[in-house]
Structure formats: C-alpha cells, structure tokens
View 1 (cartoon, rainbow, N blue to C red):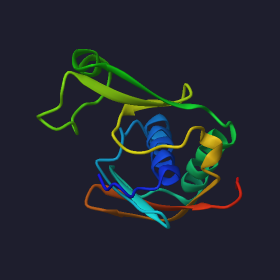
View 2 (view 1 turned 90 degrees about the horizontal axis):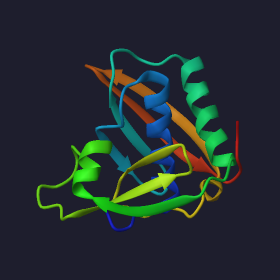
View 3 (view 1 turned 45 degrees about the vertical axis):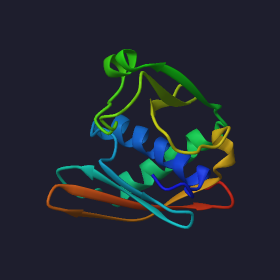
Length: 149
C-alpha cells in the first residue's frame, strides 16, 4: 500500500466495500487503486449495475459518512483474525497480531492504511462511473467538499 494514501479516501473505500457487500453479498473489492482526487474498486460480479443501484450505493455511503461514526483501530491475535475476518490479502509473513480498523458498528476489517478519526471527516462521496467486463465490476469515485445525497 502506498504511504501517501489519503486517509479520507481510504476510509471511504472501507465504507463502499461494506455497502457493496451488504447490498449484493459480493464481498470486499479484490483490487483497489486509491488516490487523493479519484479512486476505483473492482468487485467480482455477474452484471453491470443500474443507475438506480449506483445512486442507492452513493446514498448509503453518504448516510454512513453523515453519521460521523468513530474510526478506531484495535489489535487482535492472528488466530482471532482468521476466525472472524477475511484474511486472504494478508502477507505470508504476517506477525502474531493484526490491526483491525473499525468504522462504528458498520465495518471492520484488517488494514494497514491510514484512516480518518470519524466518518464525518470524509465529506461527500460521489460515484463518477462504473463499468462491467468479464465478471469484474469497477466503481470509480471521488470525494466532494460537502456531503451529498
């Protein structure tokens, strides 16, 4: 993971991932490119999303942002992480403890990246486009200065 990742954008990715999994039971993205101005997440999927679905995703992400949920980190044993979280992306040389980043009661997952202290710091989330090709759904997004719905 790049050291220069924007904490606001990275935290928004977590909320998007949880929203996608809750809405479509698709799991977290398998690939992400997180930048300060725009980002993208790739999901294993079986079809493109409708405009109505994209709007609903955006609305739900913004609702979580507006709730101003605390973002905390905790450290747990690797065995507890294996029992409770998807650890497929962990490197083979992972130590005995794992850092879990939790956004209120909405999302929790292993992560090494930087994050905001509360979801309200993220501001507005906007899906800029999406595409579907050979089982991969890509969602591109950016953050706005003011919260949108």
